[in-house]
Length: 312
Image (tube, rainbow, N blue to C red; front, side, top):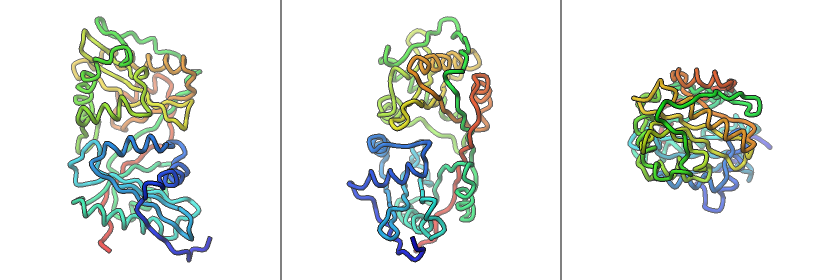
């Protein structure tokens, strides 16, 4: 296709989500998303705007802007911006970022954040040239389930490992653990777990969740820690190990190891091939535990924060 093809940046119409996702999933094949999954995520945003860009009539790039779920009052929004490799260096990313920036200003934002993979240095370099800076870095890791030995980690005395499928009445207590644990994840500024209803919608009842894969450590009727698996529809033999959250008073007592051991056993029973997770590089305790389990490093995820493009 000629680089002279006209570029048309357009807001996403309701009937074009599958086309939008086809570009998103081609650019991010390790984290593919279905329309049902995307709608479940977007439904929890106070507002959001999506775009696609056509060059010569072909959809070659997409973008998303919304508030940060973990900090909805932040003056920086959250974005995704993706351009097909075959159509880079043609001004498509610049046109999309200009549309993002104009919309962000209309919502009172002064900047935006996003995550890029260290596997593609060109992505980070593009934003760094526009005044962005690295504000965080997560180590992605993968575990081969079949070959991973169990930790044989017993929970502390008086603590039982169960699931929200077995004990759904513990859901609010699990959220209370999230409220305590999420702000302790290294981040500037600290993030928040969000309101109860939103947390349940995204962490418990979303299309990618199964209550039988949401493990909780319980002392009496109080959840002292949890660890949940999520299951992407387009990667049926893969599960993501999400946040391992433990109340401060219970940390260092083996709760996290017992929870992760339960996850591994579940994955083996269900024929899961690979477990994936990621941790902020400054989160040393959980990174040591993942290394002990045999998780192997993948390309890091870099969090970038920066200014909007100048008004058009």
